[in-house]
Image (cartoon, rainbow, N blue to C red):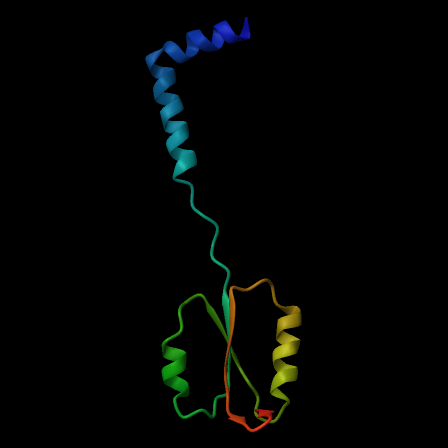
Length: 99
């Protein structure tokens, strides 16, 4: 009985149009927002402003405090962070060191 009622409903022109609209709405629904990226940057870098200018709107920028341990700063932020697509670090380096 349910099958025969469904068959009758699907054969009408208005119902087919409604089914098509329903399919289009489902097919065109917006995808989920992409995960953000994190950028950790040392403000004393010579090309600091150029690096900042190249970042996408989806990038969250964290300025590293030169008076604190950079790795600890990054660790603290990552521990509190939601999932991210990527992590970028721009900083000075030296032999066996990271500033």
